[in-house]
Amino acid sequence: MATRTKAIITCAPTGAIHTPSMSPHLPVTAEQIARAAIDAAEAGAAIVHLHARDPRDGRPSQDPDLFRPFLKAIRAESDAIVNITTGGSPHMTVPERMRPVTEFQPELASLNMGSMNFGLFPMLERFPNLEHAWEREHLENSRNLVFKNTFADIEGILRLGQAQGTRFEFECYDISHLHNLAHFVDRGLVQGPVFVQSVFGILGGIGGHPEDLMHMRRTADRLLGSNYQWSILGAGRNQLPLATMGAAMGSHVRVGLEDSLWIGPGQLATSSAEQVRRIRTVLEALNVDVATPDEARSMLGLKG
Ligand code: KMH
Ligand code: ZN
Picture 1 (tube, rainbow, N blue to C red):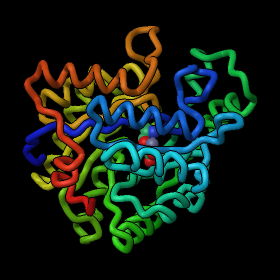
Picture 2 (tube, protein in one colour; picture 1 turned 135 degrees about the vertical axis):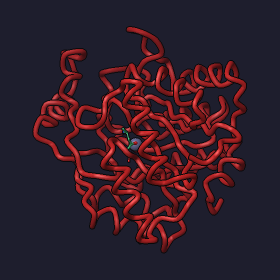
Picture 3 (cartoon, rainbow, N blue to C red; picture 1 turned 180 degrees about the vertical axis):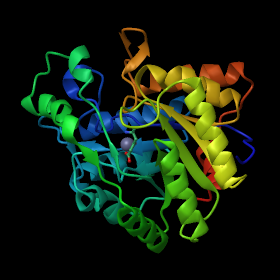
Picture 4 (tube, rainbow, N blue to C red; picture 1 turned 120 degrees about the vertical axis):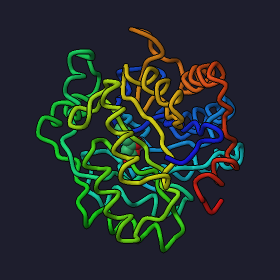
């Protein structure tokens, strides 16, 4: 792992996993997404990782026209690094998922490093009364869902990134994804500094135990040496404990309602900014300084 001088906070305010009936605080309209991202940036997030939703029912959408207004508002009011998803929703095809990154050519985008099961159905127990039929299907259909990220898909996205100057947040949900990433480094299709977002606690990926985190870290160190910047994303209840553990070990951190709706046991976060402030308190207690957007750009080799 590269030595961390300051911690980069990424905030993912909406995503495509949670649905509007689960929390009244989940942003859905362009205005709400812009507000959530700007507030998160003001609270200390150097990077905002963005998805869009159809304002009619909150369904995830990769329509560039739905991204345009909030990208404009965020860029007008903040200097935060805009990171656009290429994951979209695991229910979408890869060409559909690529539309906003092709259109807006951001300095940073996510890139999911392997195909996997993506089990959202356990949330049916916690949220039995979802308002829209699509929300129920979104969870129910995940019993038979493959989140498709083949070698050809990944290579295509990498080549697009090279052509347009977009670098990547490499989403690694399991040990094999680190091996896939190392394969592309070996082939010269990925150059350092490599921004590894290790994702814990998605059903279909690695778990959320501290031993899982240690195993990811040891494997990333073995495969990538000092050529990578390490960040931690814990899903759901794993968010704060794993970000804290990673931060104490020299990682960057990611929070936001995309990854967890909660601020404490049974307590919904009222905003992503609240989660940013919480992890900031942890970083301060650990005497870790928080990176500005420009400091993060320099650490990650972004075009700015
Ligand atoms: N939803 C997260 C577990 C993406 O957008 O490409 C990972 C993510 C994927 O943010
Ligand atoms: Zn995402």
